Amino acid sequence: MSLTNERKKYLRQLGHSLKPIVTVASKGVTETVLKELNRALEDHELIKVKLNVGDKTATSQAICDSTKAELVQSIGHVLLIFRAAKKPNPKLSNLLKNQA
Image 1 (cartoon, one colour):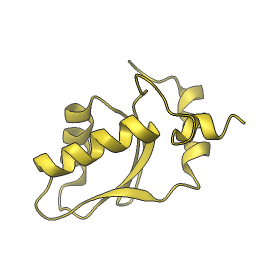
Image 2 (tube, helix red, strand yellow; image 1 turned 120 degrees about the vertical axis):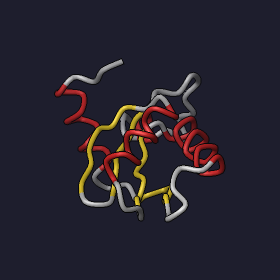
Image 3 (cartoon, one colour; image 1 turned 180 degrees about the vertical axis):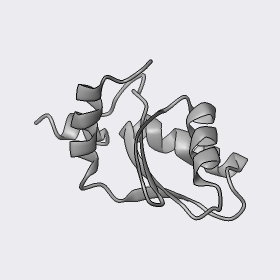
């Protein structure tokens, strides 16, 4: 599932006002971090992740591979990632909240 440039632009607009939900610290991508990322993606679909690690490129690739999410944007130490939920909750989904 590859995002088009138009879709990425739309997701970047929605993600601009979001705050990072998950922080990946010095231990890297652990099992606990992956559980939290998967929960956040299932609930919100579009999330920001803050990286406090040395190799941001490898960490962002590991996050996207492990969660099957798409990298929308990476600026500094913050990633914006997207994964469509199986059953989106209109009260939690960042995509559905902005359609109203």
